[in-house]
Length: 412
Image 1 (cartoon, helix red, strand yellow):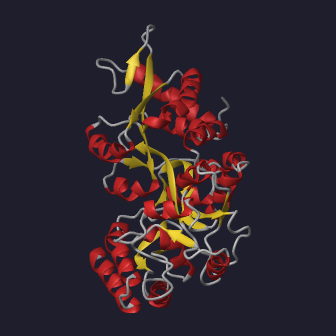
Image 2 (spheres, rainbow, N blue to C red):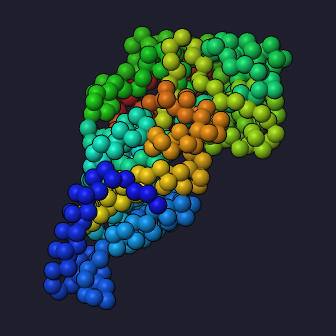
Image 3 (cartoon, helix red, strand yellow):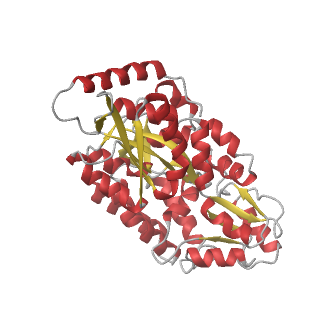
């Protein structure tokens, strides 16, 4: 397995120094270190990973152990448990050195003081921009990214052969194909702002403004002219308008209508592509059609690895992350396990030989990281319900204004 040369010399010197000091220690062995047959100390890194990704990481773990003598213990866990267990166990000294997770955990992990910044050096430039942006919090990189995921439009090419120019053209092309409901998107009784966010950005109404350090919670941009224009458009597409958006359509119904050929366009993520292809549909991946002429930017979710703030093996852990999990080989192994676009640019290019992956990558180039700041929780609390009510006939501008007021009050 190839490893990156960036920072290897410095990391190796620091690692040897760390291990040498550990070998000179007397009495009990330091946490995370065990003595070998020659009485010398060796470090073991504990890495919590999604149980379905253990095999994909074994090659990097073995290569690191062979190169450095540092064993890597890959502990498979249920993804749903990793974040809470990490927050609870790191302060006690019982947590892992590294944990796999999603970038939108960063606000909570940082607030709880359980993650440490990751020194990536020049290698940060080897990753997709959106991946590094998502991994950055308060100006520091806290995560080694390995995958980028975003929604796009699946188009049934047997029903509509050409990509539409914009939102109105999409509806027109579907209607010309004889469809009563050309386009479906998951909503449900409580709305689904994640799926509608690309349209919102096209109206110039992002959730928060941003600086070089990341999203700025003090700069809420939901309101204003852009917010009012988006809310008005939302109402026009709802129950009292075109009916394109419908809260009776949840994820299962949206999938069913697309798979049965009742809709030509489906706004969804890569997790649903196999359902379409398994059903025998020929699909293309289109960018989200803008209702305004401006770019419709979906959220990007980025997955990666966090370094524990309480790890006694930070040098070794950082070395393993940056120079082993940050290789094209390791990132492609993870891609094969999950079929999600790699975060490393060279691996993303390789994976994009698949036209479906290439399609999501092209749309992903227009995506923005989902905000990881804690204040985002106050937005989710009110956002979907407000959109659902507008779709169902509430006064758009008045209801959107209430949403902004509610969020401002919750953020405080």
